[in-house]
Image (cartoon, rainbow, N blue to C red; front, side, top):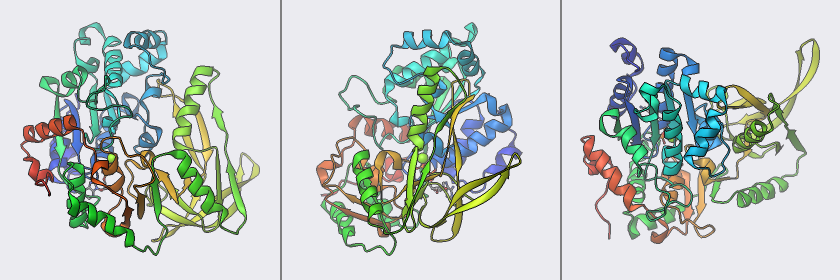
Length: 466
Ligand SMILES: Nc1ncnc2c1ncn2[C@@H]1O[C@H](COP(=O)(O)OP(=O)(O)O)[C@@H](O)[C@H]1O
Ligand SMILES: [Mg+2]
């Protein structure tokens, strides 16, 4: 159990809003914690702070930080859930998973050693996966802990039930949303855990009109007035270049390549290779898949290309959009040899910073680095997939809803909520029928709010619009 004295809690509390402070206190009491809240309520921020607390308390080896997708996990400095459990994405039964894990003593040892498991974007995980993770954790625990959820490891899971649902999961599908299963209930409800809701709005705090429109979309209560107001933003003229959000990766690649080829300056190619630190072909395959989720092997840039930063550089945060000023080459002496190292001078509006090659590591389930890829932490930024943008704050966003199929529940809200304000948004083609919200998610989230003592209206649930 993580128990902190009041002083150490107070040291990290001041800038947090009331609901964040409450969540931190609950975390410090040591119970499992599911933390919900609208996009921009500061969930990932809380996660970072709680991770720092857990590191101080238990040491980094006893803390696991993970998300389902590589891009989401790299935002919080973690690994994918599959790599933590040493699994690939084959659909195996939970017994098969357990057998696979038990065959590998180092995987068991690592998982057994975890005192706190942090999971971001938990609502992107289908219930079948949570069930497997929980089952494995319980069955590899010491016999006297096997009746406790996750074998007694404290689980902190953070997400928004009203944002994008897992692929292929609907209210009627066989696989369910993460909170709609026994494993969730035993872990976070009852006497082993608690569900807490963050009610702040930090990303859009500067634009209350936009916040209200977003709440309407989030709760599935957007009428014509809301939709028209959002579609009116198509008239927005940005002085900077805008990032288009698309559903499919091929569309994104096509846009970025087209824009890049329209620039008449020399091309700079950053080629990377995955370096494997293990001979195990299965671990290699898995590590390569993890790395591809957050870093490309070839990044081609030109002067004036629009880019998105995927790593924090100085105080420029991931998700910031910039423009390439120039590609530079520095001579560095490494191990008595002179090496030429490329870097990219990028203009992020407020400042120009040098973006150097960064190391993207991939870990195995034992938390040991098994591969890495040294690549420039930049993506071409004229377009990006909604999936990859989840969790990011983007400076200027364009969405043409006529171009893609927006059938997943919560996806429209996830996309729109990347912008900070209406003036950072350019949208057309939004229709009422594209805004899909899971009834189950709504009902569950409302019940969680009520149990936290928050009236849904106070968390932005609007009245129904004509
Ligand atoms: N208490 C706070 N005060 C000011 N800004 C905050 C606070 N909590 C979070 N933020 C900022 O709000 C933005 C959104 O936070 P984030 O944690 O990414 O939201 P979420 O994960 O809930 O979508 C980030 O820029 C973050 O730094
Ligand atoms: Mg987040």
